[in-house]
Image 1 (cartoon, one colour):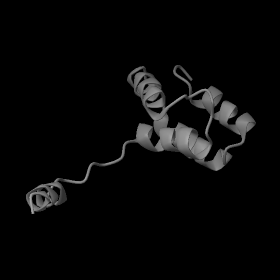
Image 2 (cartoon, helix red, strand yellow):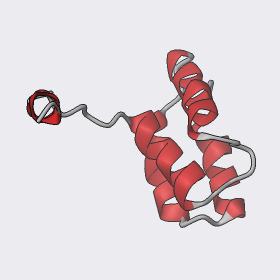
Image 3 (cartoon, one colour):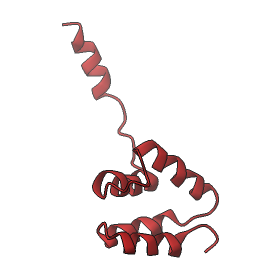
Length: 85
């Protein structure tokens, strides 16, 4: 019964809201399995950096989701929503 208090504690933790970068990286790394992103954390680091630099990550997420893992279309999204555009 040592696990019962731990289970109750975990159940009481607030649900963490998924960020735009989380969703974008999930699409690119988990769904599309792009080699450019070796793991989820490297994708998140890059996304958060781009976001800090003013990139439109919401637009990028919409575009990448619509691209449905088409490499050409994902690259077009990157060009369309990169920092400074």
